[in-house]
Amino acid sequence: MSKNWMTQEAYDKLEAELAELKGPVRADIVHKIDAARQEGDLSENGGYHAARDEQAKNEARIQQMEDLLRNAEIGAAPADDGIVEPGMVVEAKVGKTVMKFLLGSRAANQQLHLDIEVYSPDAPIGKALNGHKVGDKVMYKAPNGKEIPVVIVSAVPFKG
Image (cartoon, rainbow, N blue to C red; front, side, top):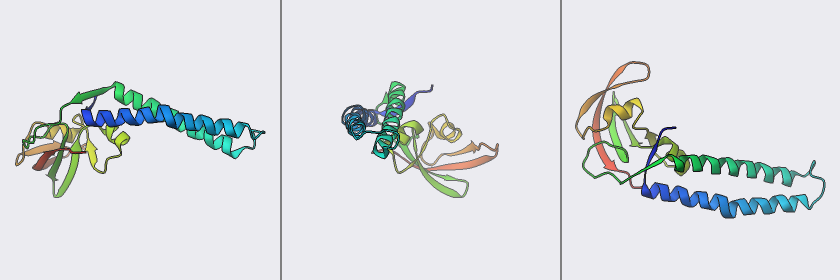
């Protein structure tokens, strides 16, 4: 599994959420299951089945987050120097379209629920832009093989 680059702040947020899921959320679900069991016949007990579904989702999320944190690569927030690198919010003119995205871990984005598109530094556009600075024009090879010109409009550290 590849490493998931993230800032210490993002790592801490994920750790806090994981602690919540493993502690109070898990305990609450166990209480719901126990209360539903005491109602009797489990085969027709909607509350019991709903609580078991909630438990399964919570355990899956715990596993997902543990994997993400286990494979985390913590890095300092990048300098505000206009150079594209992981942790930067990049605004770029891609062909005729201007797009804004974070260069970082897509897996971490799924966990943190950010309101910005995230591209991995290992993705084709991430590889094309990484290390370049504002004003640079580079060629990006799209997944369909087409070469697309990209101009870096801005690159600032993510403040999430």
